[in-house]
Image (tube, rainbow, N blue to C red):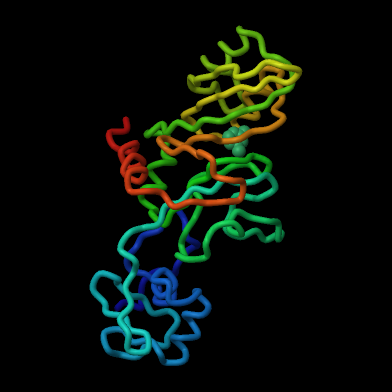
Length: 258
Ligand code: URA
């Protein structure tokens, strides 16, 4: 056990598994919320390597320390958690919002603690949002080097001409530079066009800005895939845990990045 490490930051893509604060360890292990875990500690119900630990700054190494609550050994679930949410419109992509707006944290399980969204969808964007406790994988998935492809169904004002689709796919000039090649196709042309676009970058409001730049503002935006993951028929506001094959496929996308 180590009580002299730097303090915990908010969970995020740089999160490391070891060492960790004891209350966080307990929450990750599903014993109680972080607050509830602190209460267990101050009540003297938690032992580390046989010694009662009530000091809230204490840290443990989950690989080497033995933690007990009321005499029962507690371990971290061995596998990290991975799930996808079908994000509805009106939810901010953050685990807590100082302004008290609805957030995606309202829609995913509270346990395990340390679950966080991989990347961001705008408040009005709907669709596939990946969550995990696996900070290393999240960090790689968001790194531009790995070019993870994200596909969106987009409804836009007007009917883009063929040359406009070509411009979108070869790159449009935005204030932060020309966009990388994208795959674009018309799904349905009506008074407002339904399009599909697949991009490998992750700039802020990128799809909205790309279509605005070519004169076709976005009416609605829905993410249907993230790398090998597809949303399928998940209802808005619902989530599902990934299967082992999906997790392996996700990991494979981060192998051999340039
Ligand atoms: N592009 C956008 O403009 N918004 C999103 O939410 C995602 C991609």
